[in-house]
Image (cartoon, rainbow, N blue to C red; front, side):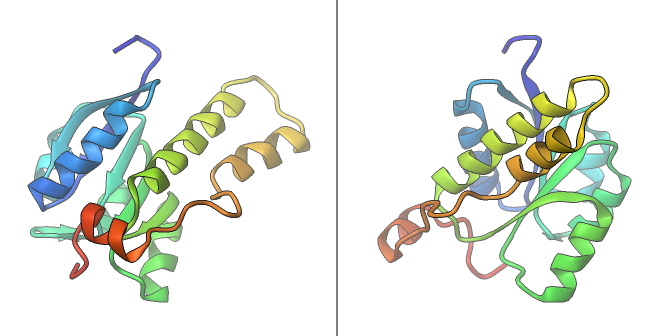
Length: 161
């Protein structure tokens, strides 16, 4: 871990999925998993981080409510696809939303985009072009790899929640 690495909190109630997400994060240069948590209560006890990867469904509360409390950027990683849930996540401050199941390359691409976003915003005063570039960095690229049935079965996070 270098001092410049982005620190990530993984909040996921399924420990296997949490470990998989943590592995994807750890494999990317510039990122370090600082903690994993399987409940809202455990996430609240985690130290300061730059980014939280949060599931919507947690045993002791809503991941969306947790996002409102956190003092960091957050991305939702969830099987929830209801429009109200997605709007609530964005309103709570989520900078990204990735629907399970997804391929590891999808999460890696979102994290790389997030790193670009952070680099752009690390400057002083920004012009409109810089602001647009920062926000564009958070959006998935056209033609990004979508999971196939075989890769979904092998890399799925859980499809029921």
